[in-house]
Length: 200
Ligand code: HEC
Ligand code: HEC
Ligand code: HEC
Ligand code: HEC
Figure 1 (spheres, rainbow, N blue to C red):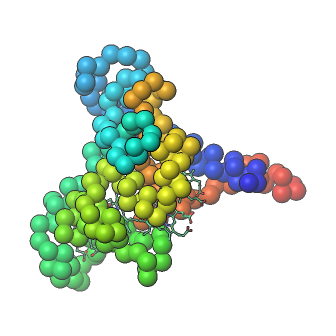
Figure 2: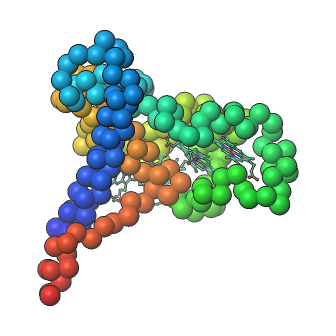
């Protein structure tokens, strides 16, 4: 891999990491006395991350994923999705689309639409390709169907980000903490060095 690309990836990762950390700390500020408190900085912050036990990796020691739903503005989806989708869509006609900001730029439209990942019969949940229910906090299970290698690396600790220190429990960011599921490609930011090495 080219050096600048490595740097760009590191920069992207650092951006992500910073972001994740902030929300952890914000959570800690909101609720300083939760779960017994005590401990030092990152250990304390980690105490306060709401987490879910990762399922489906029997050959990897137990680890957890930071929950997503606690901070998701649109969740529970059932705030609005109390009627069948077709009815909601009819009622919304002529108005601005409810999810106008969600534009799929992922796999091609022949391969993927909303129902590839969302369970239309119960929008609070995600779905596997075979329409089995997946909790929104376990989105990695949906991603892993098509991105097996990344998911395997993630479970092993080689892809992604660990939160807090190295003492157990191991808590990691979910795929969607870094990749927008609707537009997963990370913006590649050119590091300052790239301009210089390009001959100026
Ligand atoms: C503020 C109300 C509201 C919330 C909260 C909400 N939705 Fe919707 N959603 C709608 C409406 C209204 C429609 C009908 C589509 C339209 O705008 O024409 C819709 C449509 C959809 C569709 C069909 C695609 C489309 O654009 O028509 C999907 C998929 C969907 N919502 C997923 C979700 C998920 C997943 C959540 C929770 C994470 C959620 N929605 C939360 C109001 C909402
Ligand atoms: C590749 C899988 C995938 C596809 C395809 C997909 N989603 Fe999502 N969507 C997710 C996941 C995973 C989340 C939870 C994200 C998180 O944890 O932040 C989510 C979150 C949402 C949310 C709540 C968060 C937000 O951004 O407002 C809405 C609304 C939503 N999806 C609507 C849709 C609609 C509408 C479509 C089709 C146009 C769609 N999704 C297609 C995986 C997908
Ligand atoms: C149904 C299969 C499928 C599912 C489910 C799926 N993806 Fe993808 N994903 C693809 C395909 C196809 C591509 C584009 C082909 C490629 O470049 O490898 C892609 C591309 C990507 C990329 C690379 C984007 C780029 O161009 O650099 C990322 C990152 C990604 N997906 C993350 C996710 C995450 C996170 C989830 C879970 C929320 C997910 N995917 C779920 C099929 C899927
Ligand atoms: C802490 C942030 C982080 C987490 C968590 C994370 N990724 Fe990534 N991922 C990255 C970065 C950084 C890259 C490299 C940038 C790029 O290629 O676009 C990347 C690249 C990818 C790619 C593109 C690989 C390629 O060769 O182009 C896929 C697909 C992907 N990740 C899927 C996943 C899946 C699936 C998960 C969860 C099981 C996940 N990622 C978790 C940061 C993350």
